[in-house]
Length: 336
Image (cartoon, rainbow, N blue to C red; front, top):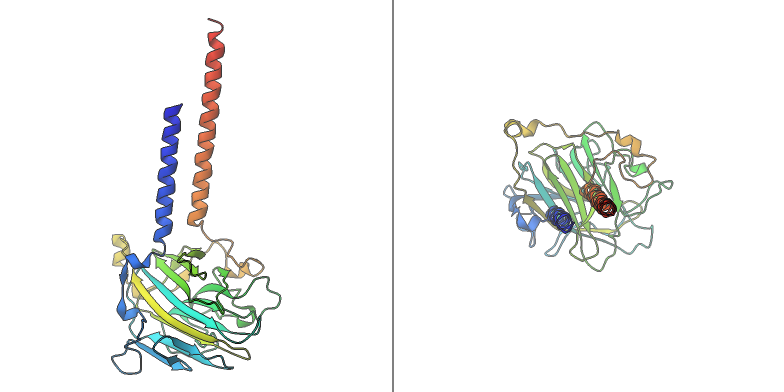
């Protein structure tokens, strides 16, 4: 009985340690390799319109020594900043340090920031000042609800993968095309806020740190995502009748050291079509008040809880069985 309990306890500890390590590694970009050619870091050297620049900007964007302001707190402004070097990494993680602030009171501010990994760059349009029919990945930090009927709290972070055939529905805040999302109080904080976007082995994970506690919280975790190499990273923002200061403090890209199969290595990753293998169409998510896609694969925590429940079930069965066996042994001794 003691041996069984010890074995189960050891197995449980092993499981907890491994899950903890995996979860900590999800956005541990500092342990990976920073790619400076794809990173925007103070004092923002290499930013400008010269041929040697690694970042270019347009619209109302203002580059200072402390931040890159995509839009000022003024109406009808659009601005963006784009990496001029295409990214050929198969597995990567982008950390964005940003700040959204302004004089507008509750529900009187907008519109938000978008982080892009797309085929084209510096392509103005109606989606947070970028092209609506983009190819690639977009992560939207939307600060204003255009859909009064939506049952979700803003600011709201969502993700979308597009191959140029889908249009972001601004009037519905992109609800019909989002892969998932979460609410995050990122506006007018006394500190900077952070967003981590990880793409590795077909899995997209988005984490946020809005409380200045150096702790990541999961926002989106979805598998079956296919993104090509050779696309560009960028950030854009827009204001309309309502406004805010939309500031990028830094964008740091890390290479993730991941092994791929021989078949994966032989693929021409530049020819991959942006897509997501979903159990349901994103349009089925329209009536989901939580804003979370209901057909997404199990996340790490869900798998951990299932394994933990199964392990606890085994322990309970083992204990009950041992007790029953012991009682039966004692009862048999009475007849001998």
